[in-house]
Length: 164
Image (cartoon, rainbow, N blue to C red; front, side):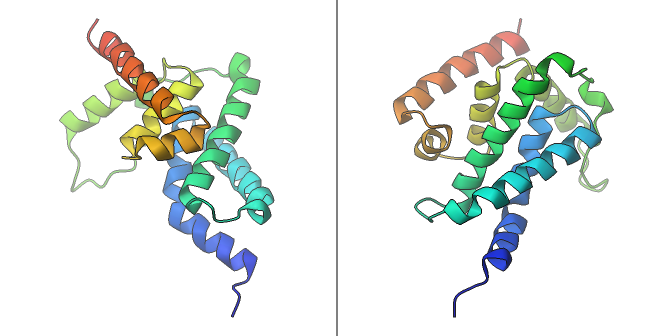
């Protein structure tokens, strides 16, 4: 029996929504913008879903659509975005598991990542998600060698930012 496309899409979206939330976190500075970007990415994924052939994993395809949507909107709104310090963000951790030292390290890392350009942010995000260079390259539309070189340069940039 062939699965209903709408049901299939919703199931895949639910399974991969954390990817979208993380991308939204990278490219937005408040909860309302986060929700707006999440909604826009979901709309773009739905519009593009009929073209999804399954040549790659749904998550890889979703990364590509989500990143392209976020980057496009980020570039359009770049001049009008008022940045907010990371401390103003809502954190999604359980009190029981809360680690203040880890939280401070995450704040510093996000502060450093915010200083990178949009493509570098996407590459770092995927790297931190333990995606291999092949998947990163496929998602970003660059060669695997280029992804490795860019990541090494980004690591150097982040070291300079974090250890001036």
